[in-house]
Amino acid sequence: MERHNGFEQGPIRPPSEASSLLLRVNRNCPWNRCTFCSIYKKSKFSIRPVDDVIRDIDNIHEFINRLQDRGTTPAALQKNLSPGEEPAFYAAYNWLAGGMESIFLQDADSLVIRPENLLKILRHIRSKFPGVKRITSYARSDSVARIGDEMLKEIAAAGLNRIHIGMETASDTVLKLVRKGVTKETHISAGLKVKAAGIQLSEYFLIGLGGTEFSQLHALESADALSRINPDFIRFRTLHLPDKITLYPDGDTRYQWAPDLVLAREVLTLIEHLHGITSRMTSDHSYNLFQEIDGTLPQDRSRLADVLRTFIAMDRKQQILFQVGKRAGYFLRLGDMADPGRVKQVRNICRQSDIAPDNADERIHEIVQDRMRRGMPF
Image: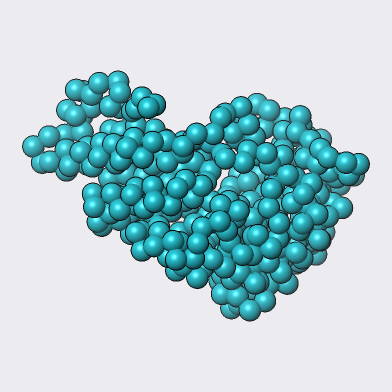
């Protein structure tokens, strides 16, 4: 049996899980072939023994009790920690500070483990932390699709009440090009199963995955699938690729990078073709150009679409100012461009970086790629 090496946490979680306790159920990704994702490429997938996860839960529970003891202080506890205890202590301390309301199961797909083992973990969480309001996980559509309907309902009853699925796209053409390993119908089937089990569902749309050539197909097919699923959340992510990545490695099709104006039209098409759903739509990532897209369908459809329409209708120089200003941190929403001081700062950046209407898309792309290589935001 694999030796327990102490409390573990994986590398990522959704922004919406910022205050969650991160519990690692398995390591890395069971598929790990998607061309757009490099997070786990050099890592081997493995499922952690259930007893190790149980021990992690118990360690967190113990530290929470000690942190809540009025007879001690966090500083005093920290002083007496052994090196092996530090990860669990800091996880417990941060979770307590965040309100102890949610737990996120890591890594890329917790539903790939045996359902009976997942049930054991969920029930142990509930026994130790009965006040937790939300237990969530990433999952792949094909993993969800393999679970029986009654078992998924049992998993929901045990406490898993939100699943994040990286749909990315529902275009079979693009899914195949990026080696996603699922089809549009699998996405739809999995989404409907999650909803039928009474579990909240977040579906992710990856802006730019279709490039210029497949941008509208990517948006239209995804809108159709999302309309059939009616997820609780539709979340936007924007594709950012290191230069060394070949997004479409098979066959003769080559990825054609899409500038911001193409991406704005892509998102607008998606919004305009969502029908009959009550999803919350949110652009909750700092890399997204249009972070102000946040509302509930159908009542907010016009307001959300107008964000894109306003940008698309802008004078080219104004578009460039927003493209640069958003990435440089001066603008969060289009309305921020009414601030003359911020606009002046962004004009200075454009001048210093040699960004002009005839080269803006290419220069912005070059700068973003350069900063990605150096680990810097832009």
